[in-house]
Image 1 (cartoon, rainbow, N blue to C red):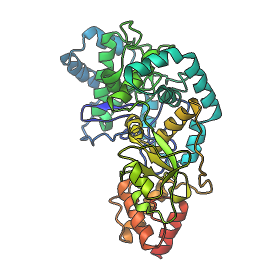
Image 2: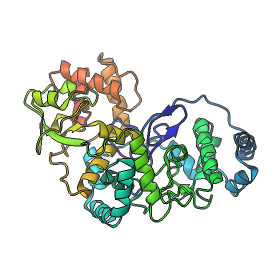
Image 3: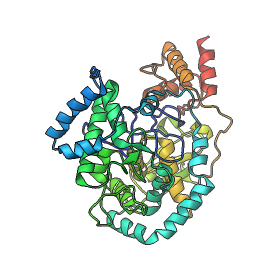
Image 4: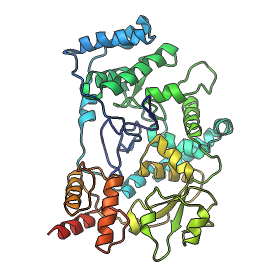
Length: 428
């Protein structure tokens, strides 16, 4: 789900709003509106100062009303939106839940790119082919990936979430830990209501405020939602999904989608490959990777600049060459597993093959506490992870690679139960 904040322009939702569900170790996560378990989210929100909350919700509401009216919200809009609104305990529980366990990427992909989801996506792509062709022509975004986002975010419209957005955002705004984010999204939601795009009764979404078929949060709605049907409303909840699909295409286009260009190509790596350059950050031309022995599993590696090698399960799993369009999907949701799911659901909807390589299904992903143990032990051994938070980000992966190099292991940065055992053994 896309995320827009005034402090920084990126995508998808809520790394700062907590981690829920299962994803690739080390990635932030978010609650989606679809039927899948929650997946990682994009851009982290900047840390907020801790501001004492008003003593009561009513006091906070009165203070926020003053701010909203000063920002151009009419009294009528405000009163209609807040009719019957009170703090939602479910939102607070979900916001503060810290999952201990995560799922492996192959388990997530099995669910995201299931046969039933492929079949439903293909059926929708066929039944909406005329509309999708219009959207593709207007925005220059390949329609199969728009349909794939639709499927992963809301199960093709089967689950938008059921919490009133004003209620969920007011709850987060009242909670001092999330007040800046909540108030920003709440004010955006009021602007949407005032514009007449939707009524308060129909404006429902996830606990984190993600709305409609493709789960836009309010600020993303204001920035990227479009009235594709021409009825004067940007209705991301409408049964025909046209506005939502066009809005998603607009979002991807605005971040630089290249129509007809590759997204991900599964590759094989040569013997003796330097795994230090397979860090999802090192960029080379496709020709340079080819010169190093990287080969597409099928056909030729498409020519392009800024190609990266991705090993989501380390040297023992499939390898991928990722292209700029892959990074555009990650602006929608900054998680490798999510972007791979969108890519390969889109590929399968378009009738192309799925992932061919084998996953190391015998590996067990680490729990959050085990990741913290790993970080602490690596740092104690002299491989500084720059923090012990249970999130395996770039600093931790760099420390892992340096440990692997020092111990004669393949420096792929892959975190697993086997790696933890090796670190434990090294520490004595």
